[in-house]
Length: 161
Image (cartoon, rainbow, N blue to C red):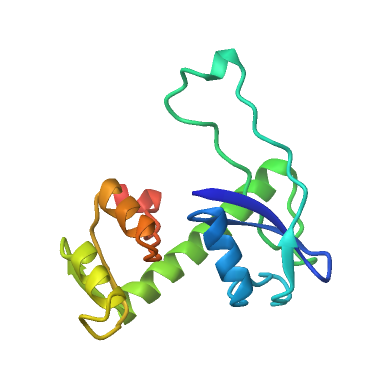
């Protein structure tokens, strides 16, 4: 996965994740990448600072949390940086839950058959339909290498209870 800082033609900055740089290029060509603020499909990569890990961070098991870009309304008046981050985190979690709930409601759960079902649809052996299910990291990588677009369903902290 790769994260790009993006900017629309109306100078709105936002970030998005892609399976690869070619996946980004393909989605931009098909006008699937749009600004979450204004909806513009005229999007380009913005300048990003590289993430450099020093000697102390090389052995770290998990990277530090990444900043999250979300749009906020002018009437939101947080009392400080911490409450703003908390509000943004709540908003992001709500949107991720809404996305996941939409997928679960509108797609077929094929369970462990996900990789096989996705391949069959991709190669024309089965009719295309929205599906979700389980795949190991190796299976997901193999699907991506074959040009089959897949995305993980978001897992939220409340799911781990």
